[in-house]
Length: 380
Image 1: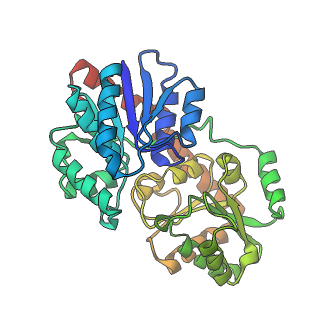
Image 2: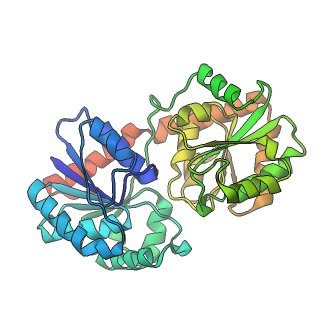
Image 3: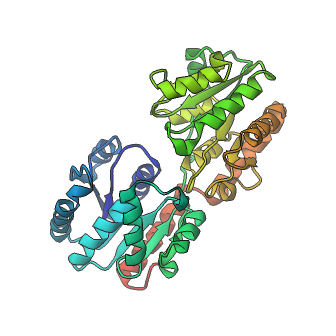
């Protein structure tokens, strides 16, 4: 069975990493032949896919003005490859990839939705594309896979065809999300963290949706009360070269308590270096990074956005988003727990991932969709 994936780009992000993990999970199944088309460039994930033997094509799209040319090229690619299934990831790829597949006579089309907070809008182009996708959702895709129940609900509310929508949560690989005590010690030593200091950390690029401002201000409130606590920020643009970030850190009143790691490839090692994980986003779909922290056995404090509550359940502390005092209160509660109590909560989080959210479960669910479409029996 040939499956052609079409995605807007291949930089590091939730959808891109999920695509990579999904393809990797099917390596042992010779019945699936995956290939990928990036509407833009190879990013950082593209070369990794190529190194693992996956064919990746980039189309160099620069703006919406390139859409007619990109559509034409997609039609040619689909006609040459003759995939059994075309799977698209996110709005731009859903629209262009879905239309291209239909023009080629392919009827087994899977759309992918990951956004939860449609009220946040997005660019004017994205808003228009989302409206077009809502209109076309009844005629273009065979099935629409949402990464989160919250994503499904919000898109049904704006006109997407509910009957074609299913939810397949992201999966996590416990065998990959591991790090050693030596790696923990090395990162902490590199950043001047004493063995007895508690590290509250987060992972995620610098972006308004991640609401680093609330986390940094909450850290400022906590720093005055808890002297052995430091705050680690991992992700793209979380470094000293980011002026707005540095202004937030300076305004906290305790800039010396922040560790700005920037973008790293060794996320498991960075998580291992933390004692408490914090998801402080104002909006999410299915929060990958929260699941990764849970897989690593970290006790977690998370804002109640997207499917964070569904993922964490009672294995951590949930607080409302965009609420500085609530976030500070949740973190304070976690800091005040004993080391043993935090370890027990982290174990509970890890057990929940193993029970419900492994990559194996997710891979099997996607395989059911593929096999259903291929056999003509349907996807659900």
